[in-house]
Length: 347
Image (cartoon, rainbow, N blue to C red; front, side, top):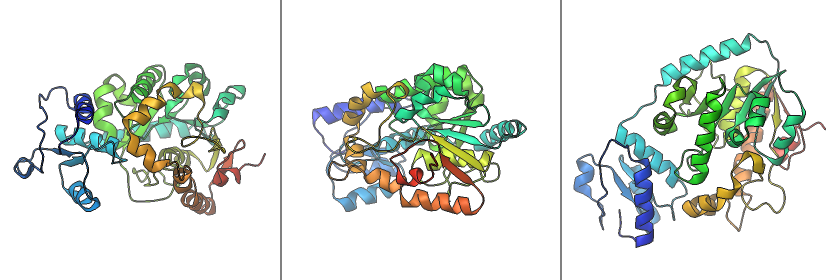
């Protein structure tokens, strides 16, 4: 690590203590320059502090080097997860996960349902209690787990999550999510589907529900209508809707209904509004303080809609249109501020 002030040094050490494998008694050695000898010897190297863009890009390309600079790297949360896998030399057992997934899907498809419902965490989610969803397969999104009443009402077949800081991080937000997720999994037979890059952390905390864990690698395709029974790889589409929810739904059936994707209404401060009963708004300030570069990059004050345009804009629309051309049907089941979804609302 480059020299840093005491505050940042303490933060890096706090995160290190959280992510490092409990069995490994390895301490940090702070360096003012790149420790070439340690790196050549196979020791992991973390770096933080001011550097030129070229230096930062070059160092990120080196195996065993991790950019954990939470003030400058918007993906510092992913760097810590990669470091954990490096330290443990961990590789997800994708073949076993695929077998569990295929078994579950075959059982579900015997029900012969013609629709799959995918649920976001927007304010309209609170109204999901007002109807019965049992005519379709149910695929729910991350922090819905906070509400056990809604969870059991929906009785989901799959639960997904895929963000390094919101779901697999060290903050109170992420730890609260995983605590509630663990409880909901114990209360149901839902499968938890997530990118395989997070499996080292998941296996460490979810051993009691190991048979419900489905780590899936990220592939190279950029389309939502992937049949995960045939191609067990998630699309590289950047957001949980395109990466996890829609591919699962498209695997189950050709007709997909969307609920809880209210979008980013005018005046929203961050990405979009969430239902407070189905998220952890009290921990958002803590999350922002822990990952300032992430929020500055994805929801900058000068262009707060950047993330929505990138991941719920033209690329998502193109992927949906391509799937629709191939026979899939997507319907937004209530009003949404996201144009790509709103034009699929027939209300």
